[in-house]
Image (cartoon, rainbow, N blue to C red):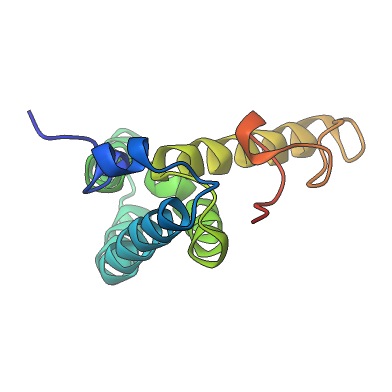
Length: 145
């Protein structure tokens, strides 16, 4: 069985060097840069698949096409295609600061999307989450070096 794309290419080194060490930050920055580059290279294909999915008139076929795209993206990058833009934004921050592993970055992106979704369903101001009120380790906020 293949390892998770969020495990990185050097999980043993990531475990050895924490985010508070220079080597740990450099490793995390490199991992984020590598994955973000792969995601950017896959973007034209993903956009084409999304465009094809929108042309499908049958609702069941459209749902199946969306599911197939999300699963393919999840297997390749560790996040669904629907989460990719948020994840790319978090990876860009990790490239700058190196404070999170790929898994932590994916968890943060997912938590941010859930928060945005809750706000859109419940209305603005209904959530206590703000970028400054949460730490990256708790699933929110911005990454600080």
